[in-house]
Image 1 (cartoon, rainbow, N blue to C red):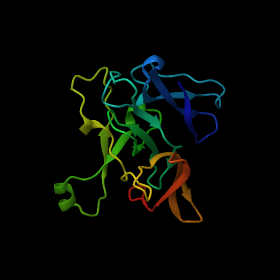
Image 2 (spheres, helix red, strand yellow):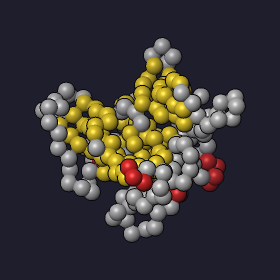
Image 3 (cartoon, rainbow, N blue to C red):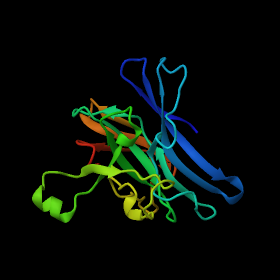
Image 4 (cartoon, rainbow, N blue to C red):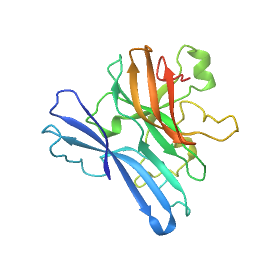
Length: 212
């Protein structure tokens, strides 16, 4: 595991989010999730809460994936503080048995609590009829597949905030967004990252939900 992104407001207490992976080189498998650590000395040293309370985000499936597949969640971006006082970041979710990945948006109101991160989802038809002005909800907690008693389901995977783009030739663009900012020139939120086919890609949004 290693530090994927950090966030600090006073320069002393630093929140760190770690890319954690389990892999088998001989089987060409790679399983990943996101955990939490913190520093109280400006980043000179870090400590983690005792597992499993250090888990931030995970696939609902345990490490039992077929040969040659990558699966799970990894930190996709830095953290930003929204105008509502909450914290946001994007995650890259590699789905089991599928090519490519999806970009999910997560939100927390308490960085010191790893379990406080909730994933965004589209509203149901009934929710949309009742409140058409609400573009979605941050109410999906992440399930730890190693302590949960419920069977894993793809319904428990975090939902994409936009569909996968394709090239003019129809080749999927597997976006990996490492940078989430509010661009003062464009007066918009901006996602920036690299992808296959090789290139640098970006998207803009007014509200972190609808992206173009």
